[in-house]
Image (cartoon, rainbow, N blue to C red):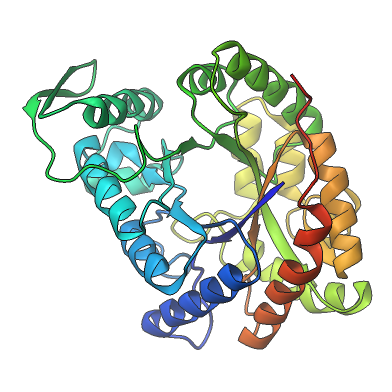
Length: 362
């Protein structure tokens, strides 16, 4: 089992953006010290009351300078908002800056309001994201220059100034729960994962099939399958729940959590899932601010170190994930509370779960 320190870099009351970024580097420094494997962030735009991270390459650069061992990356670059060649160049530099610790996360993007100002191609976002994987591989595999001709992107004899440390390329991630996309990712050797509003009854068979296809493709090692959620650890279950409840409510009801203008409320998110034919996700979305519902279904991890370790173990085994992406700084938690939670998790939860094997053996 591996563990990621995930940050939307959510806006926090009373902090300027500069102060919020400084807090982020302190969080990552502690997470690095206590044993987290990854530090990831998002790419969100035009949402000043929500995320303060429209530039994940800045996060990665500073994260590399404030940590010594953890791997760092975006989760991920919104591919259709930019030319993939820009991602290729930035990723190579970031892998050099981090001395081979960079993880290349990509996403297709789910919010239309990100796309309008960039005049980007929202209807073909999935196709563009998947084709970008081929662009990245072709660019790094070439010697003095590469050419590429695809449906969306074409390049002729492009020569890169910088190549990545990791060969043939940094590990690539693309979060998805879509069966057709997962089939492509398995073939291409791309890590994946899902968020807390995908039920484990839905997730397990999809990622079991992804794992089967991955192994059939002959990749050298098993994939990383991630699960993202909110995490808060304190000395006792009672103290943790009392502390976290209001902050979870604030995250979903007051700021939305996903960067839409005015906030993606649970009702709106549920409606999106219903229109996609995902009733189980719609039900979870409706209850995102309901602490009892989330705890009963093991969708967030809040409690003492022993309780959190036990709950993660149960969830990972049922939900087919081997990487936890924990969001520790949410709501308006004070820095001391965030840091205590991170330290307790690193010192008492991670060692308890490090040897956990959740993927069926080949």
